[in-house]
Length: 626
View 1: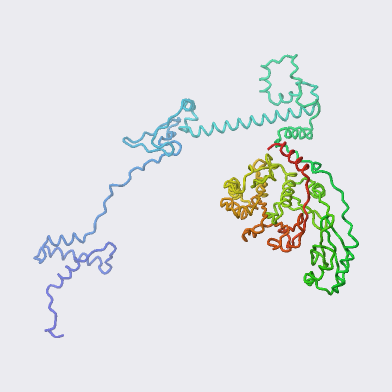
View 2 (view 1 turned 90 degrees about the vertical axis):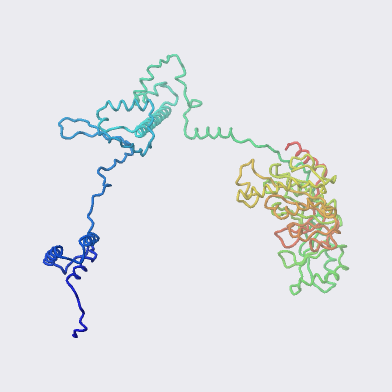
């Protein structure tokens, strides 16, 4: 290597020593490269350097050494010399009494608390001192006298209370067992000696079992002349078998049974006597003319049946199988001149058959008695089913229907007398079988026909005119109350609600009679109209039913109202506004009834109730009270 390029170094040994001293000494740094010989060599070299002149001062060298010197560990002043005592959950901060060791005799020593120590709060009493009653203090003093209790230490009042409760519970249980044994002994003695011949000896087994009771009875002296000891608890001096006990218990229950209101229903005899009339035979001359009328238009026909209810008659006619029954309506104009009837109605087909029927009014009609219809129907059984009767159909069958299924009813037609009779039949048939707690009536009319209904116990409120603004205010409140009560009871109809509540809270069925609906539309009573709309929407499941009469065909009924009226009754109507085919009816007691459970209207003639029978029923109902 060229000399000019050789690096000049002065005192290289000193530089190496300086680098070694300035190096930071880590605690975990192990000088594996240096051995013990190197350490001794360096120590000798450091002594020589101290004696000789050096470029580094002595003070500076000390500071460099101090910076890299490892810190010495010192004992911490926060070391715990003695652990703090933890308070006990039972004894608190008080020390246990321990037995001294090392002595032959059993000595009791107590540990004194450290001077200046703060009291540690108890887990039960806290920092407050425990206040003991005099009784508890007496227990503590008594326990201190006992050496065995003293060995165990301080007794807690909580444990003492638990002991007291346990003792009281044991005493009560013992008392209950003793009472049961006495009762069993009395029962056994009663069955062993039913006539009580032994007298007070029947209690001897009981006294043998409990000597303490015998000692207590000896103190009370009973005179021998007293006859009370020979009395028996069995009635009538006989053996009380379980059957007799059950019978006696049932008799007591029957005595305390709820006594509800007693209503005597009107008798069926109040409706009058049945009128026997012969109207079941057909006129032979009319039958021949009907066959001739069909032969005249070239249709072979045969009469196979005849039925009548005393007002309307019907011939059942069977035609050829090749003839279409839908064409018979077109031939009505050809049949009319040849038939012997002024007005007739063709039914094609008769329900349940493939035949047709021709209905015609009888020349000598016979009235249908209400008493006959009532006594022949299921209403005579006096069931609580809210059935009503109106009259008879053409085939001499009784028309009866349930009010709850009928819903809201509309009676349509310009026939004031017969429509009022229909309402009388409906209401009286319901009042005959239901007391005022089950059925109520509200009449919104000031017509004199309804004066007989005044002072009846079935009335929901007094009669008012349909134009009175407050005529239906009470009913509207009842409607809202029932709606809220049914929702709280989680039911949807009146029948379910009455099954869940007691007898006093049951709701009654309310029939609202509105006469006349045409007057309400013409004069406009908005409050009554709003209430009627609400009842039409939600009154049927709540047990409120409308019976509305409309006697003026020139006043139209709203289509929305007609859709909500499930049952419709129509008298003769030339335009057939309510029921199709009502233009073929006869003026007077003749109607078509459309019920919700049938898609075809039924022709019905109303039953007649005499005025004297009606007054007898009303007088009986008024006398039973509300």
